[in-house]
Amino acid sequence: MSLQRMARHVFAATDLATKTVIVYSDRAEVKRVVKVELSPGRNEVIIQNVSSVIERQSLRVEYRGKGNVQIQEVQFQEYPINEESDENAAIRPLEEQKIELEDQKGSLDDEIAILKRRAEVLDGVAGQIGSSVATAKDPVKQQSLFLFSPEALSNLTQFLEYYGTTAKELRKELREKTRQSEKLYVQIDALERRIDQLRCSSEYDNLKRMISIVLESEVKEETEIFLSYQVYCANWKPTYDIRACNASGDTTERSDKIAVCCYGLIEQKTGEDWCDTEVILSTATPSVAGNVPSLSPITAAFHRPSFFRSRNGSSQRKPNSAMSDEDMGFGSFDYNDCADAAALHRRTIAQANSDMDHSVAVSYEHLPCTCFAIARPHTIVSDGSEHKVMITQVDLEPTYLHETVPSKVASAFLTAAVINTSAITFLPGPANVYLNNSFVAKTHLKSVAPGEEFRCSLGIDPAVKVEVKPAQNFHEQVGFVSRSSLLTHSQTVSLRNAKAHQPVHVTVRESIPRAVDEKIKITVISPDLKPGRTDARLNKDNNLEWTCVLEPGEVKNLHVKWTAEHPIHETVVYKHI
Image (cartoon, rainbow, N blue to C red; front, side, top):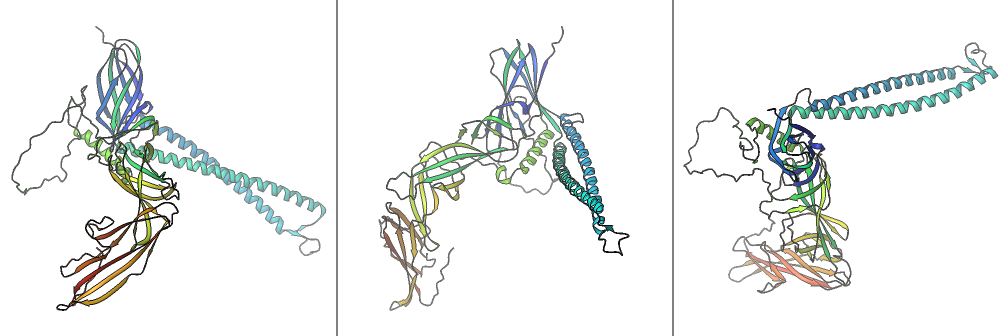
């Protein structure tokens, strides 16, 4: 009985089409399509040059054809790079190209040197002729100097014409050769950087990786196999554009809307480009192994201090993943501590090369798991830069408020109070704020679930005028039996609504001192903070919040008045904390 020969089909991972990419907060799951023509019997599909930051336990293979094809084995293999490998073979053509460019640059430099020498000789001859010109009236130098005569004048004219034409052509050619030499220098420098990058990459990562898939087919069939795996050094984070329209417009029709444009910023340095693929952004925690995790027993014991220290300062690193032949449900893998340590080392270096703000994974464990499918295919290259994709746009109904702190800034700030009436949860992230198509500010949006309210500052509204009158302080002594010192502080804040048709709600915030000693008594006289009043109150920080409605063109003066009474022999110090 003769053994049947196995048909081999070899592909490069970067040449495979990318069907979908699910990007998580700390990794991505890539699904690639392998189009292969299977032969009757056993077939081995080899995927070479896979990413160095792949999670080997995440490999999944799926067959969706109509024929009788059975997946028999899936293996992830690593082996050292040798001199005849593809990685070193990729460096050799670059070195040959560099040598060729250096030869071209050397030839250009020689031509430039010759042109410079010709120009110097021509300039020297012209200089000698210019210094030797004399007239016939100079009898002393007639023997050695150039004499003006009709024949000499004709020769001089011909030389000057030759000099002008030749010198111009020489300098023009010299400039062209110099530019060509500079371009070659730039190309050589780029090749040197690329060669150094490949050599450095092979120094810290001297392993070559491949995936082997063994299938059994009864008939010859051209089919598609879907290969899924997870890779690190990829993440995404949300960002927003908050656009408010007609928020301060002078119109009687309330068409105010706020559009919240949700985007995803994707960054990846996996070593593989995701070309023209469907992108899904997820807040879930991806699953790696296919088995239910086991619980180890836990014990309770009294603490006993250790009086001995290990000789080796670094503890033994545990492998990233447990050694199991059943983790994937098909086939086994050769796991060991060295391989896991090497994978951890590669991942750590790759993350260190990324920007710190983008490489730190964001945790969404406290939020419900959400997936956002991007509407159209995108290409995400492995260059570490941010790629902005549109998730969705939500139109919300805002309530516009005006807030002012006259003691700090004599201006009214427009604030939008918005209830999230959509079905999606706004994840925490930075936001750009636009008012009537004008950029006004940057802010940070916190997590907002459906039905929750969030506020967004839209900057200063120049149509609401705030004027602060000078404060007045009066000191007097009160009491008959025990004398006390009484300070009366009074200040007027003037508000004016310059809008012609639109009323505004304005909240004025002012600091009211809080007594930290029972001998100091603080009393608010104006406004009257009687129980049940809703337009004026003291908040938790003991600051006064006074809300009023200004009709179009209306002016209101708010009088803030409070007193501080304390023993006459004491001195009170007011300070902000």
